[in-house]
Structures are given as structure tokens and as C-alpha cells.
Length: 250
Image (cartoon, rainbow, N blue to C red; front, side):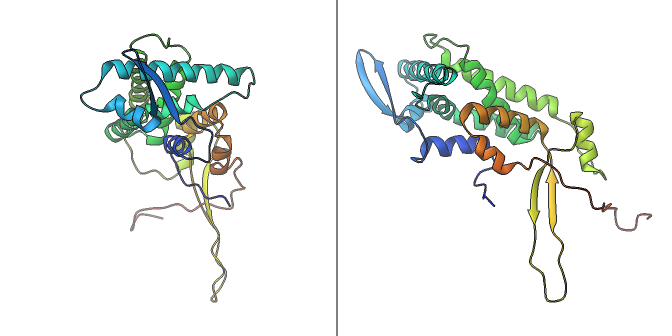
């Protein structure tokens, strides 16, 4: 069984961009004030968020990174092998803002953080295909689109929680979908000297994240990661175990 190191799509992007095991760009060439500079990606990201910010450098970093990402997107669309990983790199450059939005929106409104992360990432990639690299506000446009989508999603999904007897039924009612797709953790302990032990399966669902992660996985080449974490079919139900407060009528 494959071990899943990360359960966050943004963590996966960070690992892919910073690990030598994956296709990734190493540096970004920018021109500021008539001078050409070669910035390693960590240097480029630091320049975007450090205070006080160098506005000329910030605009040039976003302009150049977006242009390279759009070139990669076109190359992928026509089946070219000349893809350098700049779409993921742009997401990584925006990662501090994306993570902050996901963290704050999920904490304040009770939304699933992983769902919010999927939404902000998808919004950024969608907006990436529409913006002009030569727009001086191209970077803020990407960040604002992602932040707006994340907060809007969190507000729509916010709801008061209460104890329920049938979690799967509640999830079905909320998403209007079947319960065939679940995220499972199966545990099969070894038999004990005093008798057999039964396997334990913990299941939960997040239909929105499943759809978003699937779409993003196809776009960014992460399908293998998502498949390893996702169990496609649910096994037959063997029984139910209702949980009641102590002393309640049976």
C-alpha cells in the first residue's frame, strides 16, 4: 500500500517544485532597469512578499513567470514535450497567499481547508489562462481571483455542525450525489492469541475536493497522487453500528 506523505494539494505542489525528483524550473530571468538578473525560484518568491517591496522587480517577476506558464500550457495543449513546469511554479510563487486564504477562510467559516485549497488553486489556474503577462497588475489579478473564489466557496459551504446518526446520508443530502466515492482508511490488525480481530474502515467524503483534485491532477500531472489517496468503489455494507448517548432509550 502506498503511503501518502501529504494530504494537501498545495503541499504536493510545494514538494514537486522544490524537489529535484520532479520536472521543475530552477531560475527565472528578469530584466529590471536595463539589467538582466537570474533569480532562483526561492529568491523570486521572497522578492514578491518581502517588505518594502520593489514594485518594478515584483511586476517583472510576475510578468515573466506568467508568460512562461502560458507557454507551457500551450505546449501541453498541442502535445509538445517542451514543458518546463512553469504552471506549477506560478502556483508555488502564489503559495504564501493561497495558504493564508485557505487557512483563514476555513478557520473563520468552518469550511474544509482542503476544499478551499482546491478552489483557490483552480481559480488561479483558470485566471492564468486569461490574463495578459504585460498587464502591470497581472500578479495581483491572479491572487485576487484566487482569494475571492476561496472566500466565496467557504461562505457557501459554511453551516452549523450538529451530531448525526448517519454521516453518509448527510453527505449525500448535502451534495445530491451517491455515496459510491469515499475516502477510506482501512486497518486490518493481526489476529490476537485470544481470538480473531475484525478489519476497521474509516470513511468520509468530500465530493467537491474529489472533483477539484481530479481536474487539477489531470492538468498538473498529479493523477497518480490522487489515485493513491482515493478508493474508487465502496465495498458491500456488512452491517451498521448506531451510536447513542449513554442512558438513551434503545
